[in-house]
Image 1 (cartoon, rainbow over the protein chains, first blue to last red):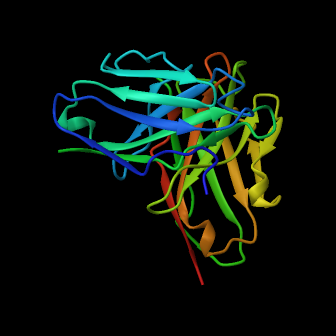
Image 2: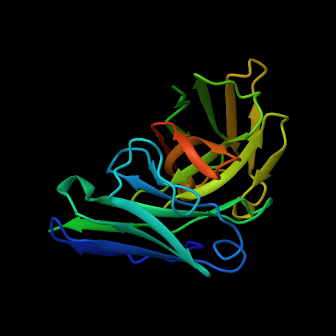
Length: 111
Length: 120
């Protein structure tokens, strides 16, 4: 069982927007700003999409955005494209010893 | 461009020790501001953090491994390694090495991953 809770799947049609939630606790998401999101295609390594709650690395389209409220972080993908179909994982810093915890992953299907 | 690459045996017998190495290019492991991590992913499942090591050799591990994991730095400062003792089928997974940036709190570079299968 993962430390962070994500929906197992979400779906949307091309051009639509979807939001993936990630619920943690006051010991991780609620206490630190280091929340990140990763996109993973089958058989590939995860790829950083969002860090520091809402910042995008260079090269990541601005269709991807992140936010946080209390113990829940969210990833929103607007203007869905077929290439966005992948698994998405949230990750939160949880202090020096626990370090990082992950969500169980959300499979995004573009209909 | 920073690159990481995992290497090691892809098949390990039950009760034996899993050993993997991550080779880092384009950056020095001895630099400040980063932690070097091992993360694994069983087939069809999510990501699981195993542990990390700093440039000074300080380590932290996921308690779920019950002290079976050890991460170390190579003297060449271009590699770091993972050992997991007393493996079982539950340790079968794709193992990734990744760099954590302490300034931005992110796993910004990942290796391609390596499947390790534990056989009976």
